[in-house]
Structures are given as structure tokens and as C-alpha cells.
Length: 114
Length: 113
Image (spheres, rainbow over the protein chains, first blue to last red):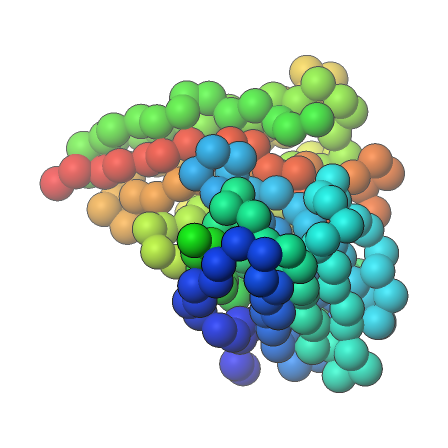
């Protein structure tokens, strides 16, 4: 069974640009969550999508947005990039109501903003 | 409110034991534990539910004290492979959505030969 796939793995952007990150969940998983990981703030929740609907949203500015498609794939977008947006962005998929409630994380997209 | 983990870091020799604690200022419905090795994705270890039910890896044990709003992760007879950063996570109010977890700041565990 293929794991969670995130693309791109690494990217470098400059301030003011925008970026789109993609996440393909494990087949059959309908829930996708996004987290931002930085050395200073740790793992912080961004959003959760389930069946194309945003179910939860973290405490991030409106520059951070996301969506989920009918095949459960998800994208997140960050507009008007700031230096502080440099981070590892992790996507996790799960199958609510089944199994242990485990989140399966992808390896992340490492964003560097110059 | 972010759960608080202690200690922030611990160094062990192979075969030694360690305990990692996770405390919350709000009522806990469940506690989730993950381990992240350097440069890798976090990996699920276990979930502890109210009432004492535990789901996860058999070789790692943990406790969940609902009254004290605490959980502890017990790593016994540590191996080199145990090295990594351990995170506890708590779900939102009501504990119904495991996709939204608030994670502690992490505990860095290093095991030396």
C-alpha cells in the first residue's frame, strides 16, 4: 500500500511569491490534515479536510488556504510569502472511525523563503 | 493550549529506560504519541483513550491519568532505533477529530551504544 506522497519535496521561493503544495493520501483515506513544522514553534495544525470539506482550521492567517478534491488529494496554498513561512509542511491522511485513529504522515515539503 | 512535555531532552545508553511525560491544562479525551526521526516523517506510536483503552505498538507502553490530565510514555530497554523526537498530541474539544491534534514541543531522545 503506497504511503502519503507530497510534492514537491523541496522548494525555494522569494518573499511575496505564492506556493502550492500537493498531497496524495493513502488510498481509501478521506481525511487529510496539514501541519507546519518549524524549530521554534514545533508542529502546528493548519487545516483538516474530509470529503472535500474543511472540517477544522488552525490559527494561521488567511494567506494559508487549502482544498481537497473528489479523489481525496489535497493542496495547500500560501500567498504573499514571508520569511517566517520557511518550514517543513507535513500532510497526514487518516481513515476516521477505522483502526487506531493513526495519522499517516508524508515526508513533507520543505519550503525556504528568501 | 499546547500540551507540555518533559523532559525536553534525554540521553541514554542502550538498555536503559526512559519516561516522557505530557501534561495538559485542559481536559483530555485522548493522548496520541508519535516519534519523528531526523529527516523523516512522524510515525504513530499509540493512542490512549479515556477509560484506559490503549491502541498501538505492543513494545511501548504508556499511561493516561485523566484526573491529572497527564500521559507518560515508557521506553524500556532502549535500543539505538528509539532515538528521535517524541511528540504527544491531543485532539480538539470533544476529542472527535483526530486529524486536528495539538502537539507538545517534543522530547529529543538520544540513545548511545
